[in-house]
Image (cartoon, rainbow, N blue to C red):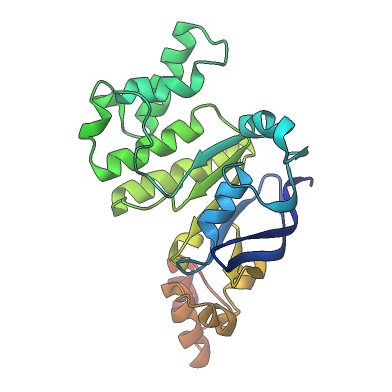
Length: 269
């Protein structure tokens, strides 16, 4: 399996604060990785560095392209990006126009663009508001539109900074199902940042950021067993992890269980 993202010796800081000091990270193609850390740990900064919005001293490769001025356009073609700062991000007036915008330079016919917009708008439940002004969207609708515009070109890599912000449980369930389906069907690499480890449960691997370092990076099953390190990083354990730990203490289960149905089956055996 080849690398989708490779970061070597990343150094970045400002205002006498060092966010990353010789930071290293390798994310393989086709994986779904959650980068978790408390507020201020550098998650959003890392996403901005990876999509070329912030310049840093580092050796970074994205899908084989070295991060540098001559490659930035090629790199951005590999990426679908959702940034955490959601203010003034819309370029067009309506939902339809906003979805069409990423497709305008792909040499697609009008019919092809229309087909792609109709398909993804139905997927994200935006099809009833395609001609609505983006200024009138509710928070959850704005978030779904931002995610739809990141996916509509079907980029091989998604960089999603806090993708579940502003979503109610129904919308979150929808978005999670779309991301997992996209990951599986397109063999896409997904990197999402989260502050709540409950949201990290939707992916496969977890990186824990603390003081500019990746203090843990492994499958979610292995990372979530490192309870002391996670708590020291200022993060709370997901409910299922806490429940598993309590039930293991009383001898009711013998391993970490992250799925509620599996938990019920294990208890009632």
